[in-house]
Image (tube, rainbow, N blue to C red; front, side, top):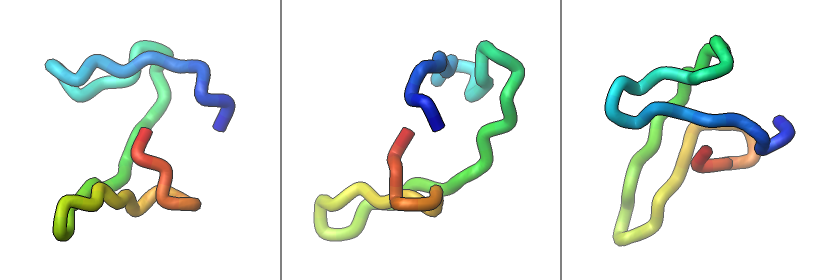
Length: 41
């Protein structure tokens, strides 16, 4: 992932037409992700 992209949080959609499918969770104040490497975005 290049890190160069945009995402509309209000509508939960990628502006570049890409598919984004992962889960975020918070445990004891720590944000984690199901994305490879644990990236949160």
